[in-house]
Length: 143
Picture (tube, rainbow, N blue to C red):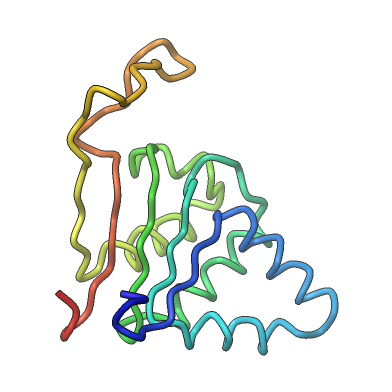
């Protein structure tokens, strides 16, 4: 996409939330959200790995709202949607985020390769391959 002249931004989810929190403290939140709203593709890595407090989850939700149906978001996560309730502890906010992320989404799970780590999750079980992987929100004109 970058080769096609489109603006792409990669960050981890926790780095994005931290940047938004710092911008809010400095009274620059609107400007920061608008900046993220202008990139053509926002790539969020490590989505759902760390618990977010309610304030952090609300900040992230604002990014999804700003980009909704106008710009693409690619999310990489090994956590299933059912595990997101641990990351987003407010049930209504979690439901809203899942709704925003999955609306018009193309979801895929990378095929395992010989170099993939067979590490089990903290519970000792392998991640549910049917519910984890990459979720990309793509919009008309993106293929």
